[in-house]
Every structure is written in C-alpha cells, then in structure tokens.
Amino acid sequence: MTTRHTAERQGTTLWVHLAGMLRKQGLLPAVIFTFSRKRCEEYANSLRNLDFLNDSRRSEVHMFVERCLKRLRPDDRTLPQVQVMRALLKRGIGVHHSGQLPIIKEIVELLFSRGLISCLFATETFAMGVNMPAKCVVFSSIKKHDGRSFRDLLPGEYTQMAGRAGRRGLDDTGVVIINAANEVPDTVTLHTMLLGAATKLQSQFRLTYTMILNLLRAKQLRVEEVIKRSFGENDSQGQAPEQTQRLLRAKEQLDSYPVLGCAICEDDIASYYRVSSSVQRLTARLHLKAAHRSLADAGTARAAQALCSGRLVLVSFHPHTVLGVIVSKLAADGSQFSCIVFNPPASSGEDILGNVPPYPVTDLPATVARLNQSDFGYVCRAIPTASIMVLLDAVVKLGPLSGVKHSLGQRALTSVPSSLAIAIRSSLDSLSERSLDIEYPWHRIRVLEYQELVHERARLTESAGEF
Image (tube, rainbow, N blue to C red; front, top):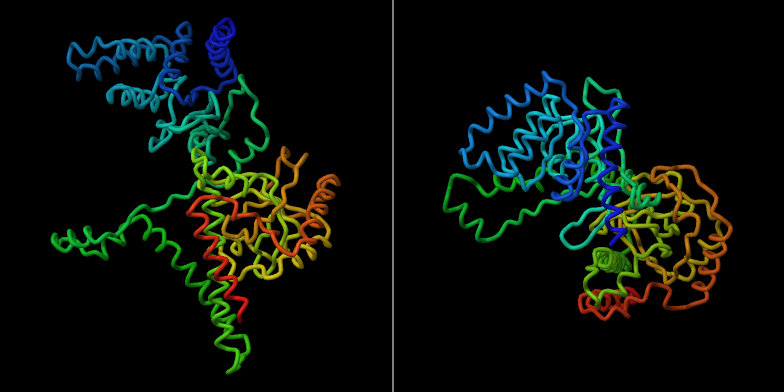
C-alpha cells in the first residue's frame, strides 16, 4: 500500500516539475499524450497551483469560455466537468479526450489554436485529424491498452502524435520527450517505434451480390463508379504508372532473351513452374498465418515459435537466396520483420523484396552447406514475410545484436560477433548433416488450418518431383 501511494505522489509531482522545466526552457505550449482519460484529468489537476497566463490573456480566456458556455442550458453549465474545465482553462491548462462534452472539446481546441493553453493533457484522439501543432510533445508512457492487452506504441501511432511537435514558421525544431519514470525502454523497442515501418492502410471494401443489386436498383450510380471511389482502387490507380513502367521493363528484358524451343520438355517446364509457384505461395501463406497468429489461442502456441527472435531463415533476393536471422516483428499484422541478413547481393534493390519467390529451394541441405562456407558480414533490413522462403529448424541467441541500434537502411556490411558466428556455423553444420527435416516442423502444429496448408504443399512438392 505504501509503495502504491509513494508512486502516486511521485506521479503528481513529476508533472509539476516537468511543467516548470518546460516553461524555463521555453518549450511551451506542450501537448502531454496520456493513454487514459482518468489520468488526463488527474495529471491536469496536479498542476492546480500553477498559472501560465497573465491578466490580459486570462481575461481573454474567461470572456471566450463564458460566451461559448451560453449555448448550454443553465443546468448544464453547473456540471462538474464544466466547472473543473473552466477553472483549468483560466490558468492555461487544458484536457482533451473522448469522454468530454463536444462543446468542451471544441473550446479547448480553439483556445489551443490561439495559443491560450500552455499545457494540454490529451489522449491520442487529439492527434487524429486535428491540425494543432505545439512546440513540445510529451509521452506519459509508450505503452497503451488496445482493448485486449497492453502493448508498445506502433510506429505509425508514434509518428502521428510526435508529428505535433514543431510549429511551421515558428519553431526550427520540435521536441519530443518520453517519460521513463517507471521503466526505461530498451533500444530495440525504441528503434522499432521510432524507425519501424508504419502499418499499411488496407481497404476493407468488398463488392457483394447484394450491393450490386442495390446499385442496379438505384440507377444513380454505376458499379464501376463505386469501385473507382473506394480506397483500395484509389491506391491501385496511384500505383498504375509505376506498375506500367515495371511491366514495360520486364517485357523488354523478356524480349532480349533468346527463344528456346523444345517440343519434348516445353510442357513439363511450364507445368513444373506452375507447381513450384503454387508451393511457394502456400509457404508464404503458412508464414503469414504463423506471423499473424492469435496469442489467445492455445492451439497456436507452437506456431508462436516459428517466427521467433533468433530463428534462422532463408530470404529471397531474387534470383539469390541468402541466410538471415529474425530479430523482431515490425508490423502488427506480421507482414514485415526486422532481420539480420548475411551477405545480401550488392545489386539488389528494395523492390525485389515483397514478392513471393517463383520457385522453392529444391535442395535444402546443399543450399545450407553452401551458405555455411561464406563469411558472415551482415546488414539489418526490414524483410516482408512473403520474401522469407524457408524457416530453418534452428534458433540462435542473438546476444549483443539483440539490443543494439540496427540501422534498417544500412548498406555497409558489419562483422558478426565471434560468439554468434560460431553458434550459426554449428547450427548450419547440424542442419547440413540431415537429409530431411531441415525446415521448421510444421506438422507438429495440431491445428486444422495449418495442417491443410502443410498437406497441400506436401502433395504439390511430391508432384513436382515427377517432372
């Protein structure tokens, strides 16, 4: 009990000292993002002894607030929420969250835009769709509850809120402060949050038979027009010029190749290519399903180990296959991972990554043995899950590399620590000695949706051996 009360007292005095420091350093106005409506009000009330306004600005706030509150009924003007906010605003302190009356939120937004609020305690809703920049942004924590559990902020969420720091035309730089009073975040967490890829927006528009019938009945809109106005089609239209150029380059490259004709094996080659592509697409689906697993489902506990930190993988830099080690998941949907990649081809562009490779690795033991003979210079890259060709049945401890600041855009190769190099070579030697079971044991996941993919892939792989 004593510890809890001590923590609460430290929490209230923290914001008093922080507000004093921000005022002394000239970092006001500031937005303090707090992921709890209750704590927003508690932290604001902890500054009740501070006053950020002079007499003229206080009078301006008073007149504006009273003029706005006249829109409310007399009974509503005496609500506790209204009374508390009226007192806070007169001292240059504001609170903004979804639990407030709409008129209160509008008053806070207008006063903040006029520079009459110096300290604003807000939830992340203030960063969405409201252009209200400040000189400084403070995070009370980098963990939030998403409705199921507490998690770290996603890169897109952090960028959206931290982007409020710095007023155009007024500030040369914006300042972002993260409160680490309870626990100092590790470098990997900070690196992922600051430099990780933002979550991609995906259109949920689905054209159904019912929708088509309703549109045909209305006659004001054509089905084609509705599709063109959807977010998904808008994204496709924006990428159309780039895709057209890539198609032209691919056609030019294809035309430059000599025509090979063979009446005997031409059909077999085409069939083998179709089967191989199907095998690799099933592998990509298997990896994505494991990456996007439900942690609450006990049946997928083993699947959680498939793409764990330290897992050795084979990554496609088409037409090359390189060795890599998973560091951490970058995208919440499991579509991208931070990986240590060993000796990637120097000429490989970022556009190579992200496409499902058109063929599987046919001779895993030989491929592993070949990769084990090369030196282990590495870079750290953001690797799409679709570009991971094989999850090897081996996990190594990253050791010093698990906590260092990897640069996802680095190009120069860095030498691998000797302890990690020894562990990787030992694992690869062990895998090379096997004739089978080099890949992660998917058959041990006793979940129907996984087993269906595994059996279908095994059937196609067996049929590919017939060509």
